[in-house]
Length: 188
Length: 166
Image 1 (spheres, rainbow over the protein chains, first blue to last red):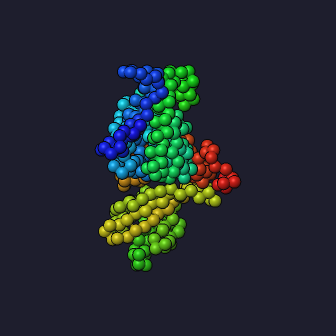
Image 2 (cartoon, one colour):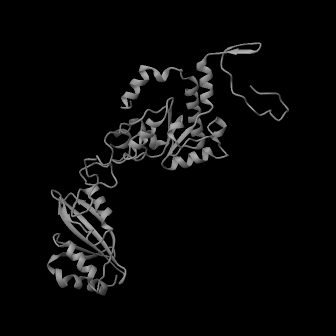
Image 3 (cartoon, each protein chain N blue to C red):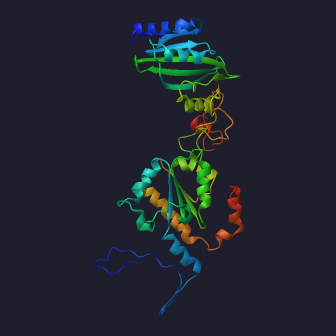
């Protein structure tokens, strides 16, 4: 929804409101949609940057690309307060238990984005010392390929995460399917 | 290194350990001496103390696996800051029992280097104060730089013969 033309606000876009019933002085919709909208536009990412993809992430946070435009201005360097774990870079097998511990320390609801070829599949490091993809130890929501991916690609991954956050059912995290999925990773 | 420097080092070594030298040659401008394995620590101590050599700096130490002869070599690279000499010493150990005394008694810096050599080649340095893995995960059961172990992670699924020659 774009506001009136010619004024200073002409380039400002306001987020879409969810479907619902509107009348004089009221707007009714489901709680899922309101919560989803609020969450999607205020994701606190935890950057877990181990190599060159982390440098691309720094550019993504910088003024030119500016992840803050999507409501993720505030990085959380404590997993306790983070919504989104961003794994960017090669994860050595020795780092695996640490990454897993960070994931376990995050409160639900939590999402994971795997940035770059190394985090997704081990990348060029097909070797005895490197974890061949972080999805071997923690569940991943969105994969961003590239070696390293450009900031635009990381932003695209964040938008995909926002879509997942926005459309997620309020009760998904309590469902037996979700618990079974975590159990396949040996979590909880 | 000039020939005279090389001769000085060899003659200093021959004063006490003539029978220990198996082979000595200049390899890539670097004096490389292959020795019998039993007296290596005494030899390094001798080169450390000898006024003509004074090898008092340990540049590095590492293992090398030679599968053809079924042996693991341990290579010591020493530097004499006084004389500006460099030297490489090699001993060969059998793969079945790669055991040799620790060099930490002379060079404390050998501590981590020997741990690394243990980590990757399984060489046991007797008398080492803390011989455990240093770089790899602690529960690893192989010595990954021995040639019988493949470099690649065998659990990788996205590579096949048509694309990667695996």
